[in-house]
Image 1 (cartoon, rainbow, N blue to C red):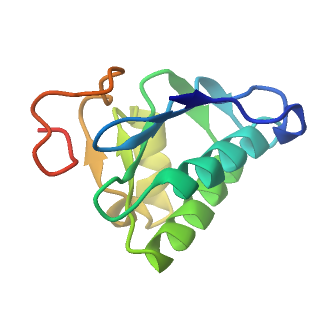
Image 2: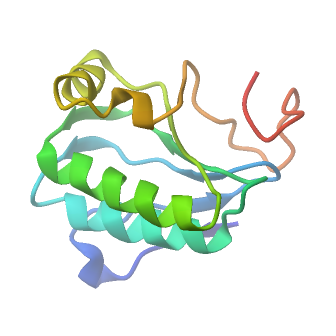
Image 3: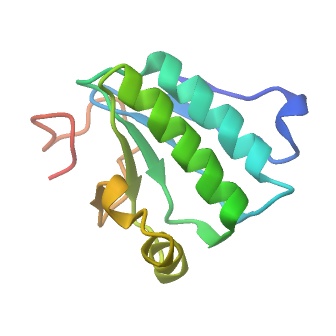
Length: 132
């Protein structure tokens, strides 16, 4: 299931994919003050479908740049997820994003996966909701 944010979300719509063991969002390009509202909207939408057994996974494999606006969106989503026992994971974060997280002391707050979540509804190899 893929859902599209409203146009008011800020330019680049980011699809929310409800998979069997995760809720994936797949932003691309630069996430900055102009495009962060779309990320924030997608994260909020993803959290409505997430649960402790179905974490939100942000596929960062197509993200070329993140600034503090993107980091803020991730931190707000993480805080909201914590209230329900849900986790926000980062998949395939690039060096720039990892450096941003490291420099701000937020790297330990986001579990990271090397590979993005598969796009099909029944990802094989996921026994606990997390990619192997």
